[in-house]
Image (cartoon, helix red, strand yellow):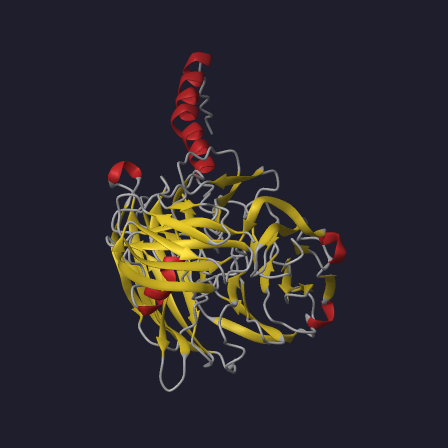
Length: 511
């Protein structure tokens, strides 16, 4: 057998190698780095009309003039793949990265609930009532999923979720500030739907599953978002039929970071619901109901650790950890902490409520109250007390209303779920209004002035979001209010103008 020996000179060998490095290895290395999606790197927080907050992960720069929106209950935001904030919504409108109303972004979820609540900057369908998802077929578009509510006045006053809708923003418009090109399109149009939107990537790591539970019934409605839009897949009957209290709204339904499990936790229930999930077929299986014994479960939340091994459940008063690799999940329960009794300004109790896994591998916890701090689980993948839970660890420049945005794991299948080396910063964003309040503080009487605009109605709410005054008036640029019956404290004055826009300002009452 004759052997043929190929001999290459150094020059002939190096040139193709350099071409291979330059045109294949380096571009693909850069491409892989850019595949780390940072859609959840900015968290916009509500603040009851005072300057808003942004928690930022990483080292991007926030450029802003003002954050022209208030939040309450519903809170969704999205950054681009590089971690730059692009849009946010409070369930009433959609704003852009310049912190202004996006073109065609007004009148999200129109109707009675919108009219009665959006002037105060809140849309009360629940903390998971809205979520942004990148369009799998178009990197310049984002879907906003949002639940809409209705009020039934007869035979009794009830609040229902009447539909699950979507709106689409396209960043090709207005020099990158975007435009809402579709709005309020229903994908579920009935009153047996909960507002907790569970979102996870499909097994192809491109498309997204969307799953919503039906009210009281043990049924789960399934959709897939792909490049063709949102497609109905079917309804799966699980059998976890619940009562009116266990489905009273305001809970969390979420997937583990690897998408293999789903948990559903509801306030006023003495347990949580756990499922296995197949990201290829979309089938839920192996349903378990794990009891949680607690003194009073008025609120709370749930969150998986980055690895998905541990599940944390907050019951308003207490925090528990469960090992999902244990043969007996209930027996693995570890009581991590009880509320430490802290009350901001000796009024607002910082209980243990909703949770969200951050891109820095820590779990952040709030409660439905005015909070100056967030609780933090620093090492959520450590067993028991080694998870390093610290109450009131992350101090904020000011109070926020106790509502965090909700995010799926955008990095599933393409990058690690989180990076423990990320820096965390908190920005305080001023809200510049054109509503003059004088004097402020005031004791007996205050003047509200909208400059060259006409005011047609006035609302005053306190920092708990309670309406304390509402009056429609003949359009006028200014109005005087008597404050004799007001308790000392901070309020938000809200004026609706003839053109439909809303002006807000802080009002301080002193006696």
